[in-house]
Amino acid sequence: MTSKELRKKYLDFFREKGHKVLPSASLIPENDPTTLFISAGMHPLVPYLLGEPHPLGKRLASVQKCLRTVDIDEVGDTCHQTFFEMMGNWSLGDYWKKEMIPWSYEFMTKVMGIPEEKISVTCFAGDEDAPRDDETAALWEKVGIPKERIYFLGKKDNWWGPAGKIGPCGPDSEMYYDTGEEACGPDCRPGCGCGKYLEFWNDVFMQYNCTAEGRFEPLKQKNIDTGMGVERMLMVMNNEYDAYRTDVLWPIVQKIEGLSGLKYGEKSDEEYIKDGKQCWVDVRKRFRIIADHIRAATFLIADGIIPSNTEQGYVLRRLIRRAIRFGKMLGIEKPFATEVAESVMETMGEVYPEIIQEKVKILAELSKEEERFSKTLSRGIKEFEKIIGGLPSGEKLPGKTAFFLYETFGFPIELTAEMAKEKDINVNEAEFDRASAEHQKLSRAGAEKKFAGGLADQSEQVVKYHTATHLLHAALRQVLGSEVHQVGSNLTAERLRFDFTWPEKLTEEQIKEVEDLVNEQIEKDLPVTAETMGLAEAKEKGALAFFEQKYAEQVKVYTIGELSKEVCGGPHAERTGVLGRFKITKEESSGAGKRRIYAILE
Image 1 (spheres, rainbow, N blue to C red):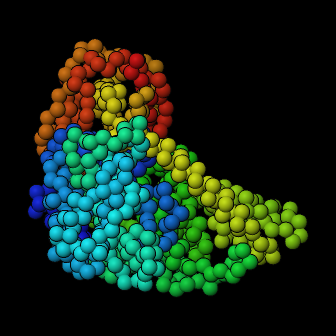
Image 2: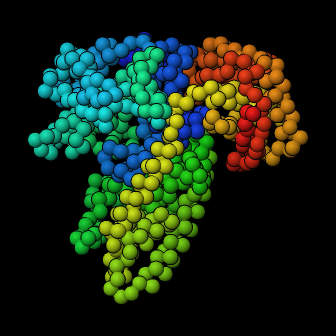
Image 3: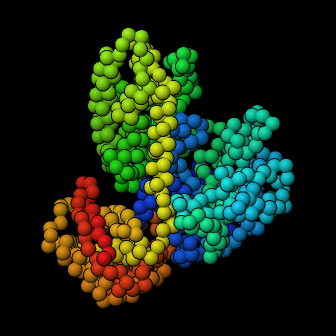
């Protein structure tokens, strides 16, 4: 089965069940400071899961592009990627388990043709926060899954969310495919990770809201939230338990084969010594990392991110440099990132035309970053030579030093070990592993802190800042001209950040004029009204809509007096008078041809 066929079958199935299909949102969250990337299909829908009416109704489905980097070090196996596609369907307070479980079974067995005997499911075992989910287990048994293939697992396995510290969450039921691999032992079961069972779909019964105090309170509406990875389902449908051999990744792997002169299926004859033992490197891991990371980088640049040393730009830089590093280890000496990116465009450009539309920018950024990193690698080699030259005879290269080379210059441990071996020196890899593990622990803690508050922060103050952003956008266009348009925003309960197109620093006079215009609208205590209409009608009525690829066929248009009319999902304050006084605290560059404003409501 091809990815095109899979996406169509999924969306057609849920269309027949009364769902409206949403376009994929950008990888970059809108107005959300708590997460760097969209990492699940439900992320753009959080306001609606909390009760905000969606313009397309209560039944929705989509294929959403996603990016996760928490487990970046696992990329290189057969089933992990940083960039992936997530098929999902949602009930916003409409249908519930008695509909979703039979539909799941119907799609798996009737539409996909998966043999029933290959399917196992898991349900929530219950704890002090929520009861054991016997209801879901009974529904699975009713549709045909025998009791012996229904497992009850704890919160670690069968509970989804909240996305951060607070927000919508609930028990889930996961579906697994029996690959036919040998069981790892008598206790082998879905979720054990040995490879016998491959998870491919998850039905989340989103019925709780986790509060800041850690309480699980019933949501005002019960929601269904499902997720099925395109790559995972293709593995199941094609009986091929390597995601990199599916049609969304295999052409990219083949391009790397041509560049390196190596075959993906072959193991390398490279060896290195770890803890005194001879080890062999599997070349396939390097192919996978390059294919995944350049694919992810291509989509990030298309969505407006450029390599930098902060936030999304830092992640992008790390992905590109990691891919280049592993390319060097495959023996690719010439610049190659742009050629791999062109293969990504050929493979996925029909489904995601933005990567074709932004081709020039994507290739330029990749080329610049590869050139920069080549210079960094050269400096790293000089640093390595200097370190080795200062080692006493017979001394091991300290693991902390090896990790310094990895973190500062991008040298993977295999490369450092290989270079050290040429000098007849061993590396203290146990110490390297400890330093690496500690770094990962800190990184994950940082990611969790970044996510604190979660996508569910629809507090009164954040809603006020959302409304103020609309007024700021309109005021900038009135003061500077209609060539100004939003390219990003980021809201917290303390301030707003707004990115827009403009080639030069704003003058003090322009900043004051924008402030005064916004405050005039606030002082008038204008009503903030919302209408639902088609995108074409919205544009005819003068509504701003700069993110057209992510809009559905029906949109919400928010109007504030005569100054602002904009397509947006909401929510917003009911009147401008509640906002308080608007003040711009900082104005700076945010990239070529872009400016950034920070502002507060006093």
